[in-house]
Amino acid sequence: MINIGAIKNIACVKKCGRGTIITGDGIGNILFVILKGEIGVYTDYKFPGAEMVSTLGSGDLFADPGLLQDKKAAYTTVTLSEAIIVPIERKSFNDFLQEEPSLVFELIKELYLRLERTTAAYKELIIQHAQPSKNQEKKPEGKKSETLNTTDTKPIPHKHENEPAAVSAAAAVPLVASDKFAGESSFALFPAQHGHYELLVNNDDSAHLMSKSYTCPICKSVFSSLTVKPSKLVLAATDKDMRSRYKGIEPLYYEVLTCPHCLFSALQDSFASPDKSKTDILRELETIKNTVQIDPCSRKDTDSVFAGYYLALFCAPISFSKYQLAAGKLLYKLSRIYQDAGDESMEMSTAQKALDNYLYAYEKTGISPAQEQQICIIIGELYLKQGCLKEAIAFFSKAKSSANSSPAFKSHAENRVYDIREMAAAAR
Image 1 (cartoon, rainbow, N blue to C red):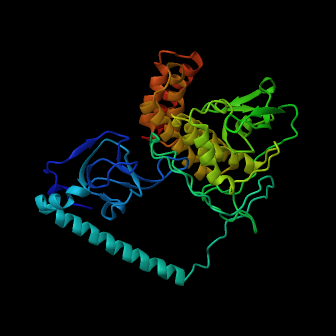
Image 2 (image 1 turned 90 degrees about the vertical axis):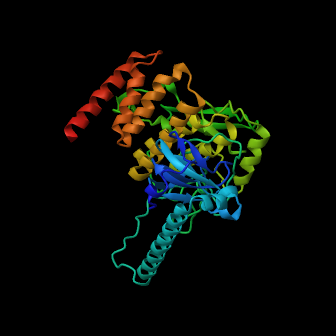
Image 3 (image 1 turned 90 degrees about the horizontal axis):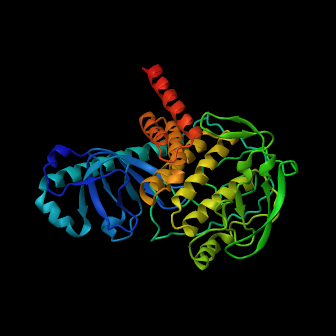
């Protein structure tokens, strides 16, 4: 960690608000030192399934590999709080070091210490591989599902240089083809952490389901898909986070529509209204079409439920101008499906990505007055899920005082504020 006392008086400091993109996303490469605040480092920042690979704090420095190679930035760095940094642009790097000799020593010392730590870690890794633990446990295999027909070829991830960036989500899911069952490969868009699950999907539930025809807005093909009969839904219970539980059916498993011809996918409420060039969307879908193959029948199983959501996340940034809200909805619903599957790690990870997208949509792209109260409650719930009580209360309070207030939402927000204060009091 750099001694920030040695550089605190230099002139080129910069103050950044929360959510500021410092490097990446078409921004000129810089090296920077953090004087105050917290910075997140992300890979494939603008697409569904982005991962924050590390966080940096006061005294840390960051230099993208592309800085000295004159290449595009490999990482995107985003402020997670208000921050003060010392940016050093490549074109003025030599001049800066001549003007600030005290920083030269600090930089060299920090890079040397990093090299020592990396060498030590590498040696430890070599020893571990040379003497494997006898107590290593194999991950249990799940039950086999048989609807998806996939191949193990990796598609080329798509990039969208002109897309508005979402805070910490919507970066491309690593397009992996890992072993799923003996001799089989996983659906190409599933992230590496995705496990093997068994959801309670019943295609023969004629009491709640019907087959309905749809016309794809991209390729104009007509296809059929199972959909829930709204009039047959009977509310059984409502969770504390306002998740509705219905008797005999989980509507979340049927909310994504996928065209089996071109693979365009979206939630039912936005499927007919992509606002980007259909030609461009088709071109992007072609990059994965040979890898992401699905059974054209309308029946569902566990894999096809998850596959529909990940296809919709792939489609969101290439199909909608303000895609962060669509991505937030998809990720929020997906986190609940992971909850049903019993994977707490993926549930929390996906909920965090949903929060990042909802926050970006709320703060950057604008929310209609009719949506504001509900969006504030969702953000509050997602903050609460992550254990951020202060932030959760702030958004529940906004929901309480919303101009377009629903009595039910207002009552829920008031109850959640009370719950959080009770939790905080019990923890003291």
